[in-house]
Amino acid sequence: MRIWRLLSCSEKALIVLFLLTIPFVQATVSGDGIGYYAYARSLLVDHNLDFKGDWKDPRGLPVLTTLGRNGQYESSTHYTKNGHIANFYPVGPAILWSPFLVATHVVVLVLRRAGWRVAADGFGRPYLLTMALATALYGFLGLWLSFQLARNYFEERWAFWATIGIWFGSSLPAYMYLEPSWSHAHSAFLVALFLWYWHRTRKARTLQQWLVLGLISGLMLDVYFANAVFLLIPFLECCWVFVSAWADRIRAAGVFTNVFKGGLVYIAATAAAFVPTLAARKIVFGSAVAIGGYANQRWHWTSPALGKVLFSSNHGLLSWNPILILALAGVLLLWRRAPDIGRYLLAATLGFYLLISVYPWWTGVVSFGDRFFISLTPVFVIGMACTFSEFARAWRSTRAATFRVVTVSVLLILWNIGLLLQWSTGLLPGTGPVYWNEVLYNQFRVLPGQTVDAVRNQLGASVHKPLL
Image (tube, rainbow, N blue to C red):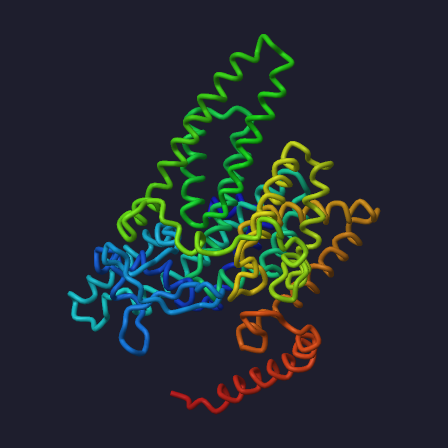
């Protein structure tokens, strides 16, 4: 209770809102999630990485879903030279799930000894529910850290509404609640943790703090390889320190030595935290540097999909999640409002954007919006807070500014929730382009009717439910 009293009203509201959304978590494993969850289940239950007991197709063959050369999902029964089913998915989500799944497994084993009929195979509801709730928790922690970062530079009210806007107006809720076995909520958490700790220690980072930052960085890569773009931030930071110190030749030698030592510790720690990925690749494929489908596809180095990534009807970032227009505008404004952090976030955002633009599957294939950009969640939150703060300067009345910010946020959130409902019910295809005239029709004509029918059916079921 003492900790609760120390929290601000915004922090309390965020916690309460998260608790209210927990019932929307779906305990399912599908698509890419099969590969991610297979690492956790296979090690926990089978004590190996054979994956022969993980999700089988109707013919009874062991299967992991992979992307084929044509960019479509295929069921793979390919065995590596080491006798393992090929699993190119990262191990990071399994690492983050492991404390919760191990505790669940212990409880299940105890219940079995007590005579309960509950399977200890990693497939049952206790395991999947634990996995899903852990994913939702990591997603919320990522939002929490993003909020803490944003309020370092902007009023708490704008940081709060920016967090709410990105929470429910981006692609994050699809992978925080509906597809929890995928890696994107974990990625948002670790990038937020990385940025929060980097920001907290950037004034005078000790060797121990360089070590911790490196461990976070390595785990960030274990979850999603594209997060390597964020390693630009400490690199650019070191370059900036060198340039700034060069003018003072007396201090320069000491500064260079300290930063060089810290950089070496950081690189070593990052590499050490990345060892689980290398070890898993060595065990499964016989090579620690096996990268799988990434090497077999054509990258768009000479023809990046710069415009399509943003505006395509095939999972374009801004066409699907228009609230991110405000977020990206804020990232640009940060260069002027808070240059000490703005220059680094802008560099990371541009780097990530360019990387996805040349990526073979920049659309995300099966995706709600462009799911890859969920890694930028903390950057989007800070950018949104900056945009809202700029809006507030246009009105003398704080109440008027707040009303406009809340109105814009709610409208864009409602639009996104409508898309989520269409996506989850099959009205909106998970792959390929969408037709916006159909999307608009479904948003304003189909979904309201479905919602009314669902409420009427629920009320009818409650009325006719027999009393005990």
